[in-house]
Length: 165
Ligand code: FES
Ligand code: FES
Image 1: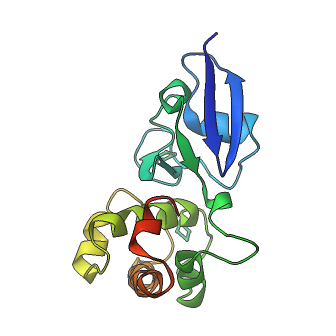
Image 2 (image 1 turned 135 degrees about the vertical axis):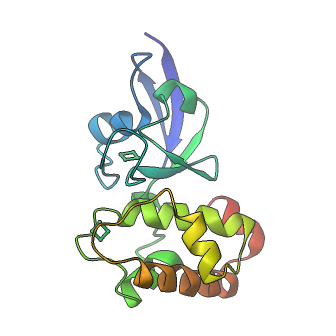
Image 3 (image 1 turned 120 degrees about the vertical axis):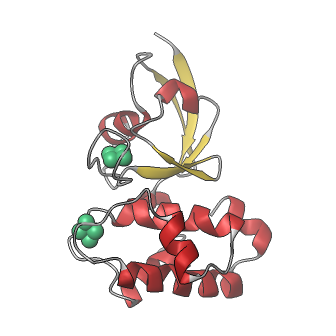
């Protein structure tokens, strides 16, 4: 079996993996990162979104071997020293979740969205998150949270720090 080396939430793991193993199953079943949920397993819902080398990916559509040598950040690696990431705080403050199933993926996708557009309009947020589905909120609070998170990130984090939140 192939052997891979991957950094997840700041910790390096060396793992033997089957070539067909999906990144989401490596994260959840081998590394215990159950904060990354599986919604559909068919690349449709975005619940499983994580950052791979700073960009968002649906981890059910990436093979673990494709992450070899990569740097993965999950929702569990966003807070630092017990302090929420500004985007996590914004989702909390805007009440941008109900069941919460979509929330980890929404937050990771939102952070990536800001790489290209640090101050997105409502329309840009809706377009940027179109690959992430929510069955509960109706999206209005999510859009508000992303724009609030963007404002807070621009105040709290230097631009260059956004590549690896
Ligand atoms: S579980 Fe990956 S997109 Fe739905
Ligand atoms: S809060 Fe329930 S799916 Fe989004």
